[in-house]
Image 1 (cartoon, rainbow, N blue to C red):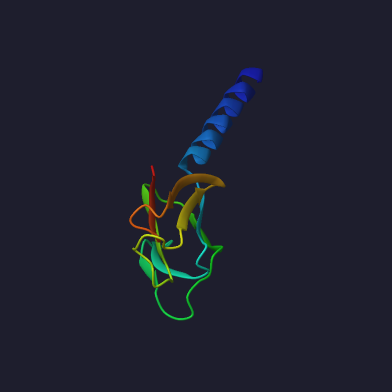
Image 2 (cartoon, one colour):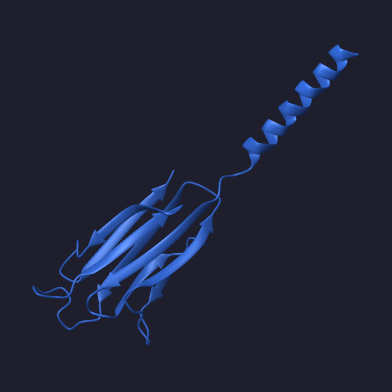
Amino acid sequence: MKKLLAILLLISFSFHSCDERDEPETFEVTYEVLTSAGNWHGEYIDEKQEKICLCGLPLPSSGWTYSFSVKHTPYTLHLDATTASSEAGEAGAPDVTTNIFVNGDLVATATSNWAPGVASADYVIP
């Protein structure tokens, strides 16, 4: 009887651990844009892997964030922003920073890396 109980417990643990491995890991993603210009425009890849353009009025302001969950990987994350300044792309333009967080960790950041006042950050969740 003890042997049968031990076998049943072993089988139970096997099925339980298989169920845990079959459950996909969920990744919490947050995009963030910071700029000294106050407002910006740009685009990002959303939870449906669609490109969303934040190009119309009213323009988003500095401190903007957007969060969503990802269950299927690999998953490409992308965020770009341009300051809403007539100086964007020229020397002296206000800086803009794009940040990508996954599960609370900063995984990609860029500050005016394309041109003054223009930034783009990318990350692939493996």
